[in-house]
Length: 82
Image 1 (cartoon, helix red, strand yellow):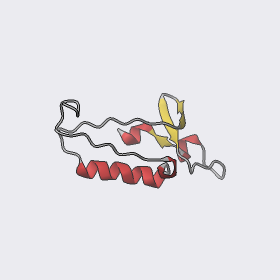
Image 2 (cartoon, rainbow, N blue to C red):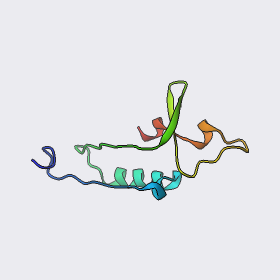
Image 3 (cartoon, one colour):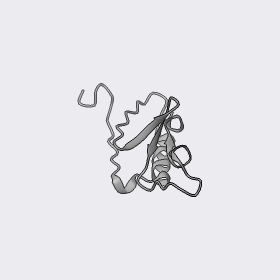
Image 4 (cartoon, rainbow, N blue to C red):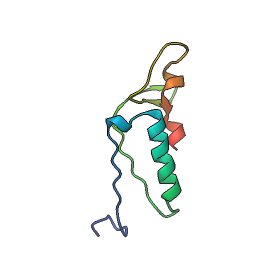
């Protein structure tokens, strides 16, 4: 029962250098390719972001503003992860 009632637990750690839009997308794609229907995903997110109009936007380490980029165009919307 060390894995909370599951056969096993897998911990995937991502560090600050992995907090780019591309690397975050790659990590989710990897999880989606390996996950089975009965699996449970628990994600702990540490970082910065902001809610706008009821939507949360995560600001990854490589976020840049200006030149037409703003929070909603440069950030990652939480809905993308759902």
